Length: 280
Image (cartoon, rainbow, N blue to C red; front, top):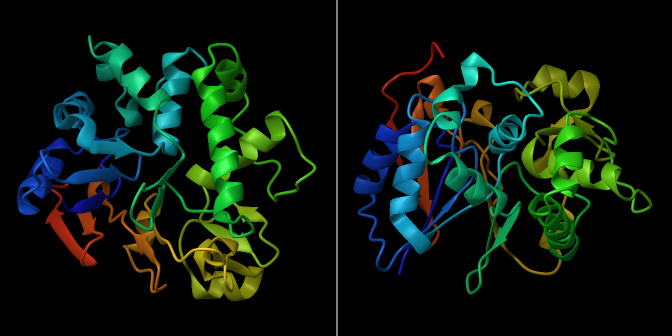
């Protein structure tokens, strides 16, 4: 049995199908973990979700920021933006099934038998696996509660708090956890999250003290168990992450680059070229 991870699909159905063919994915014996942002901006979100549903129990996905945006739109908290191409899902008979699927997507996936962890944006550098698991589990519980999830979704569009403090509780902690798991890219040396800059620019890092979250020396999640950590979310990286135990998988398919997969068992990458969505 092979274990594959695939980066942010963003509704790029055709490339997703081609990539599954390229890796000769066999749903009867292989397993697939997706890095989130299954939809949002891409041309065929409903078809993408249909393909995922066809794969059945062999596929798992973590929750991405675009998936959270869809949930907020579904529950009437946000208005759909034309560029996100969500209207087709909102008008689809699969809408409720897609919502239910996303509400049950974890923020943090830990493999049962392999030393593999998957999140959308990464793991906050001051958290070990135990802390990350606790934070993710609590937020997932909130999202499954019909009343509490509305409170969280209404209040998730906020950048504060931007640094973890064990003393924070309730909505502030849930929001920080959502931001860390689904929006994190650059951080300051003290682990304050930065939301304004998404490109890895050496001049920016030198000037403002910003650094990719995974570049901080010896993040906490390494200390107890040597997991391979897989994340998406950051297309500007172009999968360039030279950390031994971290794999970046968002290779910008929606921006006209490629959709990528990684096989845990032999550390091999696979990619298919985007048909071209740079104008979206």
